[in-house]
Length: 326
Image (cartoon, rainbow, N blue to C red; front, side, top):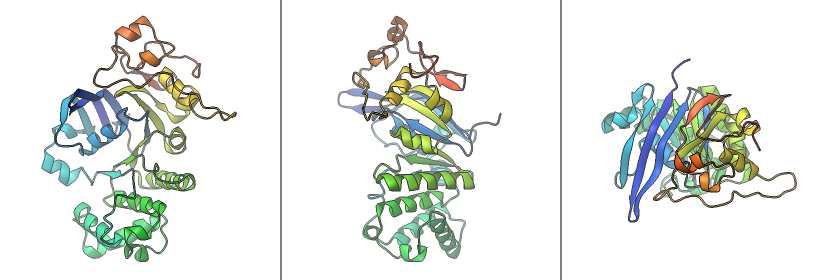
């Protein structure tokens, strides 16, 4: 098999806060193949956005403590790369970002065209000014924005939220990236616009051969767009599987509980008992064990390894379900 485009290997880091170290990522692993769309899902605070920002090299400069691990992109360890080289060749070029909130991503004082032109000068220095404009107009057309020249002359408040997110996608595609980190890109949009943006992102990724790390708490959105799903819980891996296997045969108790919490045909919601643990003083063993109906003594004493694949799944669980949903 070909080497993955990106691999995260045993990545561990903490935020320093007044109460102590918050172990946001604890031995996290992830693999993304070229052209693949991977959904990264889990409850709020599980470390999804931190992992995405670590891949981008966009973590805060202060208050971070790295404990170990590697992020390999195209065979190179981004964690060991010099800051200047990463800024010139990787961040914003080979790896780009679609942010969560399109409403705060533009400066309201300048036109959309002026802001995209500034970005294009930074991301595409090899192109002339006319070439950058032509590429911008081509991408605005690709994301299905009508009258792209008129859009460029507008200010951010003069376009809708859906149009702003289409602009974000176009800007992420400007330098022909190999990987896009899409950080919950539809959260601020209404349901009908969400569906349009998801379909657009899926089509453009397929057409341009670009991989996508799609972080979301919306399992329905992940089902619509992703080739595979990776689940995180409290800063650790829980399960990873191709999208069909994930939804039809979940094996980790947390994955099963997540899927059971979706609305069923009766309209009833089923919550997950208990609370997300503190990442300053997490439980011993498996971090899900205080909320897990399948927990054994070994789950409370020993952290399970993230192993596999078995039947297409990778798992960190001492007592997984064989049938799923059970």
